[in-house]
Image (cartoon, rainbow, N blue to C red; front, side):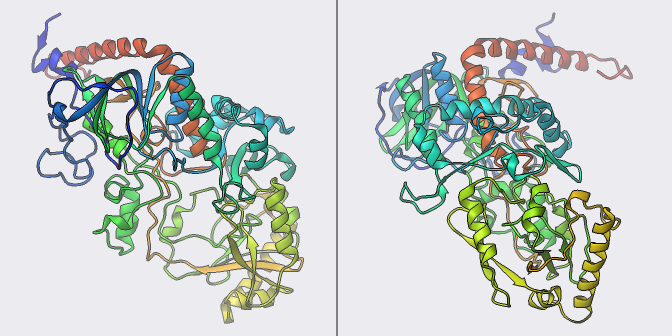
Length: 640
């Protein structure tokens, strides 16, 4: 075989792309550092202009997208110490913690670079949705069909997500959750675990409504009694996860808290061989056989959100919302530096549509969040869609509704009976946590009629926050309270009468609401909530769910599809997890998937790192051969 083809150098092809970096605040003392080595500057070759993303303008210097900017460099003379390890995990959160512990359990020498200080470290989120954990099954719950979960995941993403991701979640998430919890004392688990959606709160295990199937299995972690001192019903997942940090340290893992990764280190052929980090003492160099990016999402970076999530930007633009200030388009997550790390190293963002968690522009039906899913009525009193299709994030069409439109949702005195048929989506109510369910029943039992309304505990929020609900003894009175007058009020009353007739017939011939949710609104008291839709704001999403292209083994891929040896990504830094929108076939599956990916990739790297590197080399040869064949293809020949 010729070493060089027409216009294609195999060596240049295999060299790959440039280095990478990440940044944030830092301040700690490094343990186990060796003296700094000689003074050499990190490679600063710029990334090809087509890498990372085609979205947004360039930064004017390197030709990179503006959100990516120019890759940082580190002068070796500024390095205060050097650490050698087998695995460097950048990011010690939902996916980084289990990755570090699992790899250490299997004998790897591990270093974790985490930007949070140790004393205030906390993960984001507390709802963990997993499939068939022994924690859940031990309550007497019936097992869920794992293949049904896998297929539902793919259907909800229009088969745009990686099947390997869906299968990993469906088959190993329960195992991962039990493994994390096995370290926590029983009394802490009993104090903080809140098992949602146990089947005694529903009539079936897997619930299908309007084509969406949802499953039980969510365990939230709430400090309901304020044992941690941060307030009643605040997240309590952190204390459970800390036991895995401690276990990894007992097994030899070194945690560099308050330490921020600055740039990845690559050899002449583009393989990742470590990273530079920084803290208050200066720069540290970590030499590693493999680097795992577990850095979270990019919702904390408004520039990246606007550049990479087309739908967020376009929702704002079509609603007349100013996008010139990116700070108005930020969520609750991370700053996207893990994605930058990968792209500076030659990686590439997954193609769109790119998903986010709960994004939109102020349009949506008012929800009776405490008691679930009920009919929705518009400004003229008429229903205007299948209001059973309330799956999380599944109401994108509301962005096309008129601004300022009055809508309402109405339930009746049979709400507790009706809830038995509802699904397990976040939008539905959870009926299994006795502490919360008793609060809801108490609030509803103590309802107050009239225009002032009354407050009801609403389940999903942190703390003891309540939502205002309205009650009346007749539908006529409730219509007045909700703001319906004249023809609109009569239209609402007529529509409810028509709806009740369809309930009696057992079929929604107007919009196709599921028969088991066709419960007539005929028993006082009547409860309702109303609101006016508004497109004057744009929520960019609590968390952005898109990442860099990876293989089934979570190795980072370049823009030319070659594999960056030694570089992996998981959690919200990795692509292939969600598409279009976050979904809740099991509520809390974002955290559930993150811990599962961390657990599985830590295991995989410990057991198959050398095989992955050999496979990357073999694939590079295949790509070079394909490129050579294309370059030498005769004009007019069959496509390669």
